[in-house]
Length: 280
Ligand code: AMP
Image 1 (spheres, rainbow, N blue to C red):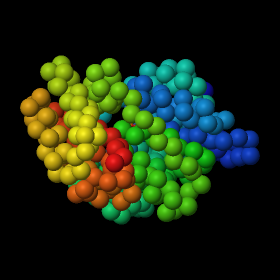
Image 2: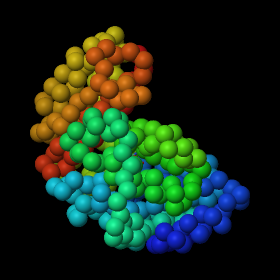
Image 3: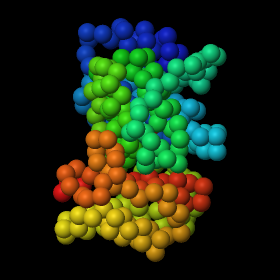
């Protein structure tokens, strides 16, 4: 396994792989957990060459967000990726990705405006821009993303289609702790009390699923029940509870077809997200 820090070297390697087999890319911000490793294993199964990028992307963080204190542990990530079977870790610096004069951004209209985009303006523009760069640097045939960041996966899928990237977007299910909490690098921020309450996000999604299976079709009713549960069972502050179609991510009133149920809850300074897709 090689660690590559320059764009030029990574592009050279990618060009050398051309015609030799499929290249799979797993973009991450590091501080890896089992959820990330599942993506790496999926890439491993489906490609000859696996690149995992580790880059805490400053342009997807708001001015008051946790860019500087985002958890980092490259030595540990490197060990985990060696055993998960990555071929290359692409690990550029901020200056390497955004040299002086950088001025070009990718803006996926509409899809990035609602849900997390509301409280994180510019976030998905930052995500789409860095992923477009990674696609041009690594030239992957497939790129693997997690369903945990559903809006991100939908934004990237739209971008790949709209800009004719020859990269297929693979979305893997959310990896969870035993108590249902979605794995996240940010879970380390939680105090023991917050950690004990955090599985309420997942429980509220299970409640939504149950209500829909029982025949409830009014999104407002389901969202209200989820909100009540989060308030009753935790001290978390709700950012949003939303139900949207999986195409344009527009809020739905009536639950019909495929619907993404998603929520974001603040526990102190830590913002947790989770979601599930239901079919009615
Ligand atoms: P991050 O390092 O948070 O930017 O995440 C990198 C990739 O891992 C993204 O595609 C995420 O959706 C995915 N990911 C993060 N947490 C999980 C999880 N619990 N299960 C599955 N995929 C995840």
